Length: 212
Image (cartoon, rainbow, N blue to C red; front, side):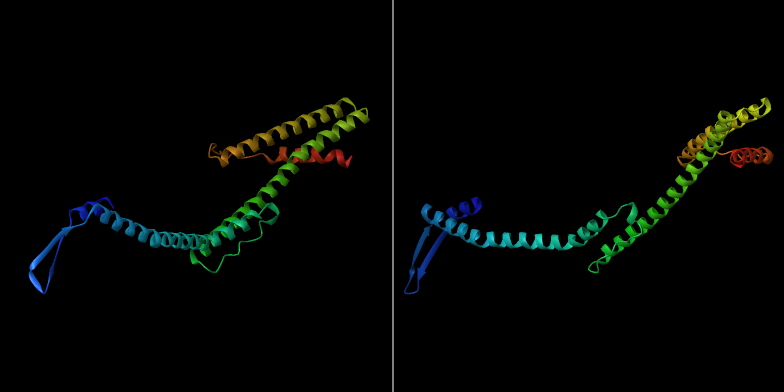
């Protein structure tokens, strides 16, 4: 409006009449006329631009809500997932192919997560069993030592068995630490031959208290 105000104040006009072609009327806009013209233009722009801006904002809001609605639906489905519901899958909306592709990728991720969680559960159960086995042997021999008077040879055998199982449990814990290092890429394995006879004897000693 500042530029238009400047141009109107510099504007010069002239009028002629056909009946008197030699007469030419020259003039320019007064300050009041300039202010009136600018005021009418300002009112016109307010009357036109405000509804247009409001309409544009409403249309943008509607389009944004409509475009993000499938994402909100997927988020609502993801909020319901927990360990017991990892077998469920996301239902992709039919409105947007890209959102459907995102839902398929999330379902693939959920499948891998379900498999990893199942492996973790199996691994935890196996570790619990391996930790319980030497404990069972040690507790069994300790019960025998408390309840019965054993001769020197049997007592030494019981103590050796308890010590061996304690070492086996310590080794199992160390193996668990090594597995954690392997998963983290911080440990290299060295494969060596193993004597089977000590392993068999240790297994027999584990179950012998229960058999006795």
